[in-house]
Image 1 (cartoon, rainbow, N blue to C red):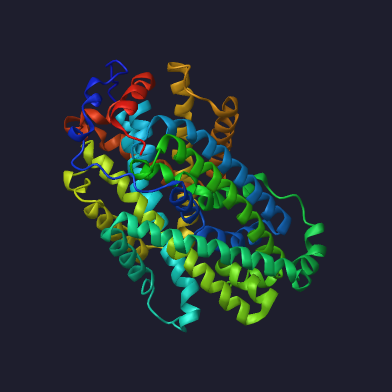
Image 2 (spheres, rainbow, N blue to C red):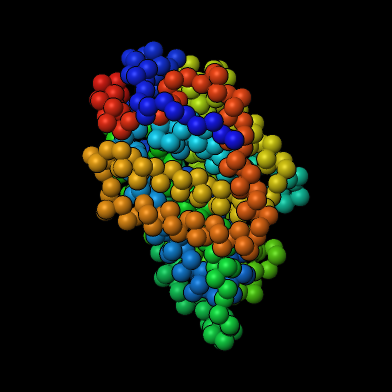
Length: 477
C-alpha cells in the first residue's frame, strides 16, 4: 500500500534562490510564435495522415469519421483551456510530471513522468518516424528497404539538431512548421477547387445510407485513436522554462495552436474520407496512407507526390518537436532525484536526455508498428492528461484565487469525456486498456525505490506560496 504523506501542503525549501535549485538555468529564448509552432508541430503528426483510413474501415461512413474528428477537436480545446490554469501557476519545464508533483503527490508526478518516458514521447516519436518512413519510401523508390532504415536516421538527425542548440533548432523548426502550414493550406484549397473529382461521397452514399446504427463502443474506440492526433495540444508546458513570459504565452500557445490545428484536422479529414471511394481507401496497401490516396484521386499521381512531400515534412517536424520537448521532462525529473543527475541541464540543452530519448525511440521503432501503437498511446496519454486537469479543481479548493476559465466547464468536459471514452474503449479492447493501466501504475510501483533520494523541490507546494515564489525567482523575460 502507498504510504500517505502527512506533511503540510507547503514547501519552504522550494523558495531557495533559483540558482541553488538547478545546475543550469535554461534561457527564456522562445517567444509566443515559437511556442505556438511547437504545439502545431507536435499535434500535426502521423495520426492525422493515417488514422482516418482505419476509422473509415471501422465506421463505414465518411460522415461519422468527420464527426469523430470534430468531437475530438472539441475535447482537445477543452483540455488546452483546462491546462491554462496550471500553466499560469507553474512556469518551469516538466509538463504533467511537474504539475502532478506539485499539486497532488510526487508519486503522481513520477507516474506521469513514466508515461511521458514510455508513451508521451518515446512511443510518439517512434510512430511519427515510422509514418515518415512509410510516406517517404515511395518517393525514393525504396519500398524494399528493411524496416527502420529511414525512421532511425531521421531520429538521429533530429537529435543532432537539438544537441547543437535550442535557439537554432527552434528557428529551423519555426521555418519548416510555417512552410508546412502554407503547404497544407495549399492542399486544402486545391482539393476544394477540384471538388468535382471527389468520388467517395458519390460511390459510397448508397451503401452508407442503409447501414445499421454503429456501436457506440466502436465510435468510442475510434475516438481514442483520434485523440492521439490531438495529444500534442499541451506541448508548450514541457519547455515553459525556455519560453518568454510563460504564465501568459504558454496558455496562449496551447489554446491558439489547438484551435488552429483542429480546423486543419477537420478540413483535411473531410478531404481524406470523401475524395476517394471507401473501397479504395480501405485496401490493405492504402489504409495507412489515406492522405496520399485522397490526393491521387483529386489530382492524379503528380499531386499525390506533392502531398507525400508535404506529409514527410510534417512528420519530420513532429519528430523534431517531440525530441525537443521530451528531454526537458527528464531533465526536471533528474533535478528532483527521479533520474540520474547527468540528465539535467549542464549546457544550453539537456544533451544526455536528448540522446537517451533518441535511443529509446530507436528501440521502439525496431520492435513495433504504427497500428499497434495508436490505441495504446491515445488511451494512455488521455488518461494522464485527465488526471492532470483534475488538479485545477484541487488547486481551486485550496485557493479561491486560482482561475477556473469559463467556470471550469471546459476542464470538466475534458475529464468526463476522457474517462467515458476510456471505459468504453476498455470494454471493446480490454488488452489495450490493461496495457495502459499497467503503464500508469508503474510509477506507483517504483516510487518507494526513489523516495529516499527525492529532492525537496519535487514535493507539493501551495498555490498561494507558489505565486510569491514565481514572482521572486522566475523572471518572465
